[in-house]
Image (cartoon, rainbow, N blue to C red; front, side):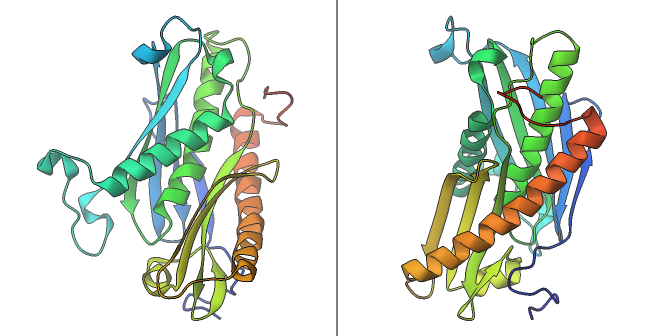
Length: 250
């Protein structure tokens, strides 16, 4: 039993509120326990220079934490004039994951900006950002289709992410900040609905881990991501009449 009463394979309570921001083409508030992230998808005509004239689209991301999102105030990166390496890493991870979810050739020369803003952090902010960004992306694509800006929904895969680690010698799912801070191993796992891995980020903090340890953590992550995708699908079904992904079409 963990500090918050969960078993090792338990996930925190997850809630996704769609259309949380009025002006974005797609948005949601995702809550995983006490971690809360606002995810928005904004559409611009045109693509970066290296893609111009190719008829393909682009998806990119930005990530940030509000000053009061943690117990100690987080300085705004705009104040220092540069983003930290952690911020660059996370927003590139979000962008890579969402580009894998979408058929860029069907999007046309449009750029979708995904913004993940952490309102409150209690571990797993990058995972919540990825899981919520997928919902925001799906809502934005649905709006583009309804407006006649694209012919079909361009989604290929569901994408979700969750943290896992070894805490006190035991593999645990969906770590809180307190667990993450003392974990011997910390891992973030991103997967598609086809049971394939997008990215696995695993680091030994206190002690090296075995292949058996990794297998246990990945199995926990697979089960947790399945639960997250069930929530994603329920939200999209209620909001835009989602039924299933069929050859990249909603």
